[in-house]
Length: 263
Image 1 (cartoon, rainbow, N blue to C red):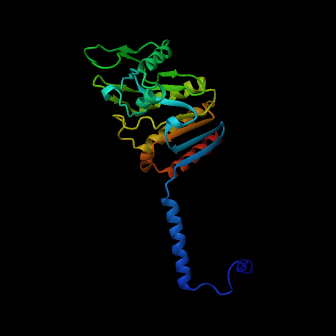
Image 2: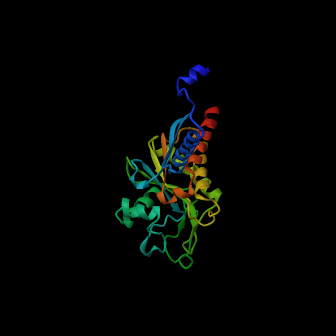
Image 3: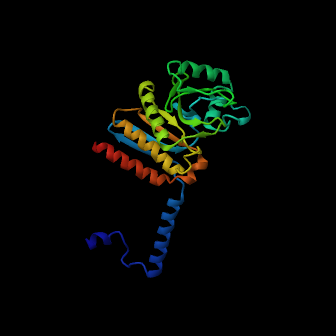
């Protein structure tokens, strides 16, 4: 064995200074590799056959069906930001997919929700702005046409003061019904979604990393019952990457894949 190993090294073993320099260089290389931001993580699952990708980018640039979070009234007005923030994913949906045509978006929502009875209705004197009909948390309205449908899921409740709030239980329920809707309508095609729930009141105790893991765990748990889609992409805003340890996300996905394979 020593003779075999010796073939790869010079006859004279490096001196202490050289060894120290080599060790420092190796540590620097390792440190630089750890410091380099990870922009994309991918995990392949076998049972069922699917792929999960977490990456930094713009969710609207993805060639996929799109998931967008809504509140329980499916409010859409972004004027002055009083009801819906124009910078939110929902606000960008209006500007980038509907060319700021709120009437067209509202018409599609009315058609998609036609078979869903509201859970209640607010009085105008209590909710001065926006829509009045409230739908159950987890209601999904399927909008648009193929190949890029929009799955508008109500996973939060908007107060009469126009402040949206949710809880872990409500978010989990909303995600569960979202996966069911994708199973029925997405035809196993690629689906892209943002980090839904970030910034909502009553979810502030969940950091970006924990929120991402909750979404991934929910998706994989539902996939045990049958494939939801062949590829799910969770697209994180580049500004949020510093709050997410992508290496830990890779390990987390690997653990979920191993667990699913044992089922």
